[in-house]
Amino acid sequence: MTIAVEDRYPTRTAAPTAPIPRAEPAVWSGSPRGPIDDTTLDSYDAKGFLTVDQLLGPKEVAAFQSELARLRSDESVRADERTVVEKQSQDVRSIFDVHRISGLIAELAADPRVLDRARQILGSEVYVHQSRVNFMPGFTGKGFYWHSDFETWHAEDGMPLMRAVSISIALTDNYPFNGGLMLMPGAHRTFVPCTGATPSDHYKESLKEQEIGVPAQAALTDLATRHGIEQFTGEAGSALMFDSNSMHGSGSNITPFPRSNIFMVFNSVDNALTDPFAADSPRPEFIASRDFTPLG
Amino acid sequence: MTIAVEDRYPTRTAAPTAPIPRAEPAVWSGSPRGPIDDTTLDSYDAKGFLTVDQLLGPKEVAAFQSELARLRSDESVRADERTVVEKQSQDVRSIFDVHRISGLIAELAADPRVLDRARQILGSEVYVHQSRVNFMPGFTGKGFYWHSDFETWHAEDGMPLMRAVSISIALTDNYPFNGGLMLMPGAHRTFVPCTGATPSDHYKESLKEQEIGVPAQAALTDLATRHGIEQFTGEAGSALMFDSNSMHGSGSNITPFPRSNIFMVFNSVDNALTDPFAADSPRPEFIASRDFTPLG
Image (cartoon, rainbow over all chains, first blue to last red; front, top):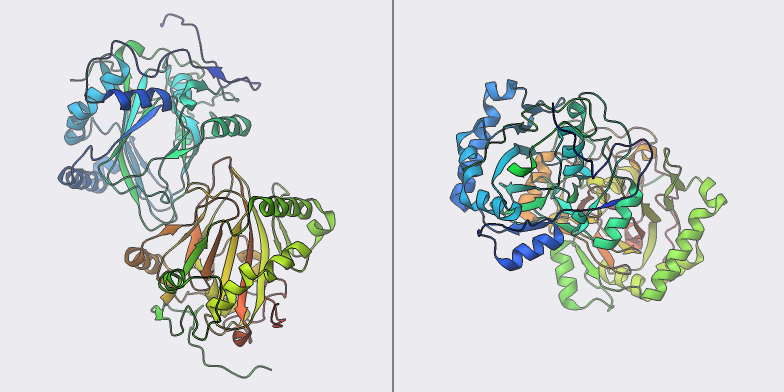
């Protein structure tokens, strides 16, 4: 039984409700020193994201590409419930909880280049809330509509506050035209409540195409008009770190150039999950970990 | 009855056939002097496209935007067979043959900034093979898969050779992320035959989503690897001119920023249509004009 906490960010409501200004900071005070310089940290605070060129060098990129190829062709991984396989092509699209499946990716989560950046932003010890690798094919890549991850993590996982940061490490080149992530800089300061009650076992559908937890077009138009849109592009090995409440999405990819990346979410140990704020039961452990042991 | 002409570019074949090197030039000799400088013309020859910043000034852009809004809300235009209305939303998506519907757009087709560029590239008098205005919504814009226009014009309209040029004039800003046209520079020198016989009245489907006349993934991968991909971006009023055999396509648009443009195809009067090379009967006049009277 969890102690009831006040819900600052009500969502999945029956009637549309107004956007809610964010209460907590994006960069938490008392942050330990870390690899992020002051200018970049200020920019993260203002925009809700930062990029790191060549977080991984070419040899590391090659090593992780091999590791992903190995995981993808491993029959036991393919059969695992944590693996998302596309129905039509039978291709592996995502492997969740991958830092518990791959030793190499576990090491990456604890690598100071990654972990110390997450600690620096969140101002505390952190643990891995979610990890996955994504394989997005060329020609038929579908993209993902606008959303705030925090909206889902709050509603369905019971994450109390916006004190989590995601890192997406590109293992293939991201061009402006092959479905790279788009973000609205500064929109992380606004929480957009979404309408509609969460169905049971919603995650089984929402990992493919989200219909509940989708911001209204009027709210997106307002945010995009105020903040504009930026896109994450860069060579394989570059990384994007973004706030849990960043408004982001991606378009389709009809180019022949596929994309793959490693994705990890760090949550502050002071922001451990409670009961879901707007769902009957929490999502499975491999999507939203309840092991709050600090990393490193 | 048309005199039989040799088919240099067989397509819609039962079995896959190899790409065919282009025989004819992109910039035709004997070109009259025109507004395109030599460097830009050389680049068009090499890449198969060129862009013009501010082809239309801000006041002209506003005038054409008003004209498009007027056409879009005109009930007789909406009821016209030349207008494509999206089933679900009942929104107007395209109006074909628009240079015969709008006096303002007829004037634009004959404007020296447009017409003289087309004459200069094609080295002859020209006529309008097709014209249309396009309205692409924000949030749900679907994009269009890779194709060569010439492949369709040859197969379904009986256009003998690659001696046509298209102009797309943006009436809204084109960002890298709201579904702007992608092109493979240099790919206009290769004709990619497509497999599959053309169904009757194919145009009724192909204007929405093309399934016949689609290049194979292997051919696209080869072209993209050799030539790369460039995207047409720019402010409202800028224009893209591209060769009839340019390999091009567009991704989806999930941003709140809609796109609209004016699109015109100029064909050389020395390249007048014959019978279709790979279809039972030619497409309607409003999609492929058979009035070969030179413009201007």
